Length: 181
Image 1 (cartoon, rainbow, N blue to C red):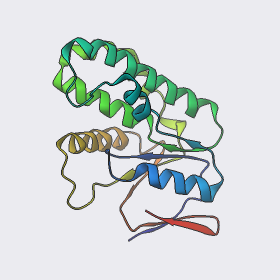
Image 2 (image 1 turned 45 degrees about the vertical axis):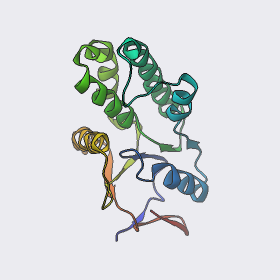
Image 3 (image 1 turned 90 degrees about the horizontal axis):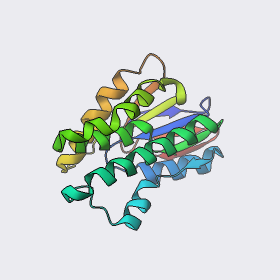
C-alpha cells in the first residue's frame, strides 16, 4: 500500500483498463479536492448509439471511427480549456480503445492519423496521471490489451508528466482529506 499526497496537482488524470475503478476514484477525488470532474462520457454515448465496441458489425466500423475521433477531440478540448480538473479517463485511454479496434481492423488506422498526432503533441495537459494497475483476478483480454497500450504510451511521457501507478488499497490525500483507491 502506498500513500500519495496529490495536493500540489491541479490537473489530474485517471487512467486504466475498463472495470478497474477509475470512475469511483475520480468521483471521490473530485469531491475531496474540490476540483471539477471531467466525467467519462463515451459509455453513455455508446449506449445512445447502441454500438457494440467489443464485436462491431463491419458496416459500423467507419461510423465508430468517426465517433471515437469525436470522443478524443472532446476530451482534448476539456483538458486544454480547463485550468484544473480530475479526469475520469485520459486522452491516452481513448486512444488505447482506438488501438484495440485498429489491431482487429487495420484499415481503420487511416482514420486516426491526425488523432495520433494530437495525442503525441499533448504530453503536458496533465500534471499527474494515475495509472490504475490491473487487480488480482482481472480477467478480460481486451482490458489487458488496453492496459499494455496505456503503459507503453505513458512510459513515453514520464519526463513531461508525473505518472504514478496505483493499486487498490492505496491512499490518496488531497489537503487534509483522503480516499482509498
